Image (cartoon, rainbow, N blue to C red; front, side, top):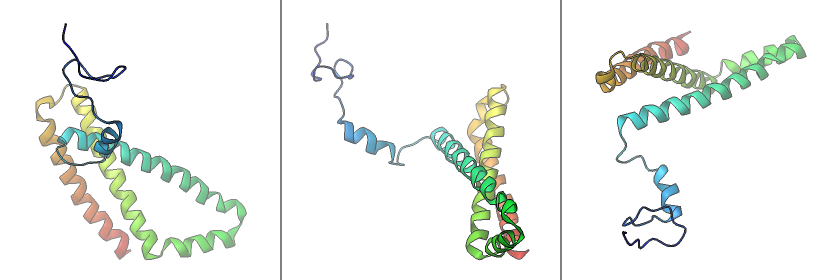
Length: 142
């Protein structure tokens, strides 16, 4: 039987040094030494949460139609301001990243291009970036 130097009640394996709880939490926020799979997972979750938040915000804005024409006209004036247009580009980035990453996950999950996951992810993100530049330019030139 291996002798463990871990404190009683620790979840460390025999012979493993337990980490301090604070360091485990802080490690989650450190972007170093992460694989591309971890980045794609994180991007998909963050953009998904952002899109859900946008959905509720969008429904709240649409409720201005119930208040009256004047409140809607006021919102439209605000929606054409540069800070809101920048948020529209961020929304477009979230849609593109989440959509293309989701397509990649569906392809790999269906058994297509399993060994080319890395190249597929990079290709999808490059395509998303190209479409983002085109779309972002269109938002500000409109």
